[in-house]
Image (spheres, rainbow, N blue to C red):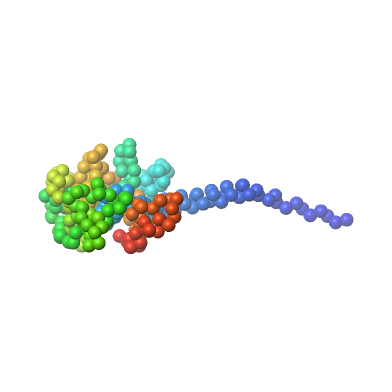
Length: 271
């Protein structure tokens, strides 16, 4: 008489397999966003001319080490800061702001621990030395749904050769010690931003500024008007590359507008 075959393992249900897949996917995304890359979208004009509202970036997470702020929502799983590294002046970084309304912000590193920073008549001084500031061609940006006329300001509104409305700002190039250079905007005489006290960066902190110097709530201003010095453990990563950009005219229910709103020329720009 034949021996009955041993029963096989019970088949997993579709529901349990789906749950297992989703858990693995969630873990993969968590690790990717926390330790390798994460996306970041530009919500304001404080980093003009380099970054426009509607730009989407990848941020590399390994450059400066890891802390709780490397993790989504600042989950307190990492004590202090591990694999720590100091940013370089001129780096564009994403960090978590201080205060009860803390949120992710992007600015440029200007001062490191022990540095002194001051603005005098619109010129940046680092360690009591003037940072070269060279006038270059005006920065021109079209007026779009995510950058309307009220953001531009009446005195900077203009039209291009085709009669399309644009915003035209005075643009300058600054060059830090060591040769790192970048472009900034200076919209005019704004004493509160253009003439400041001398700031001395404390140990463990950095001094951050927006490239749109007259429209950036940065380390020149104490909270709540600005953000003051930022602890390095709050730096989440370094801006790496622009992977998408939109002028704000797209509508979710009209897929064809996703293409017409795209600014393809901005995709792939590194830092």
